[in-house]
Amino acid sequence: MAATVEVGGDMFPAIGMGTFGSDRYGAAEVAAAVRTAIGVGYRLIDCASVYGNEAAVGEAIAAALAEFGLRRDELTVMSKVWNDAHAPADAVASVRRSLADLRLGYLDAVFVHWPFPNHHAPGVDVGARDPHATPYSHDGFMAVWRALEDLVDEGVIRHLGVSNVTIPKLRRILADARIRPSLNEMELHPGFQQP
Image (cartoon, rainbow, N blue to C red; front, side, top):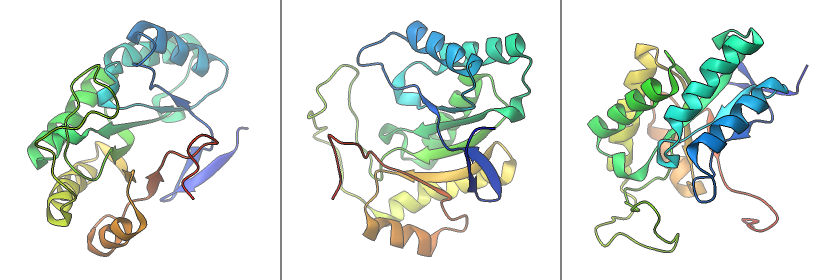
């Protein structure tokens, strides 16, 4: 059995398949990689609406479930709300779009991808900044969080997570959230060590 970690009372695979690649690979290539990954034993699929490939990944997940005789509850599928969906209604719409694209009745986890609203047009350089971007607003973030908490109550999200937040922001979120984040996703690797 693969290594697992406890997340809010559930067991998640410790290693998963990420679906970011839109900077180099088309949706069909990412979807083919997901199908292959499920076939060789990966059971955690990490998606995001901004990657632009959730519909293709959803097709791959459906095909892999059928091909390999797996049940939905044998996969852990996560997605993220992008920074252009920080209005509560937009966050809910983003999750519902991800559910439809991924062909799922629920997501095991949803992250707020960034703690502040910002928009990056497709294909722009990573250093590009939206002139209308705003800095972190705790009240604004918590409004988005509360909308996602409602989706947990509804049963379409199992766990909530934060992504790309600093320790001071995380402390404030933990203090004010009704449903505390059970996951904290951050970029950390040899080329970006986050000391």
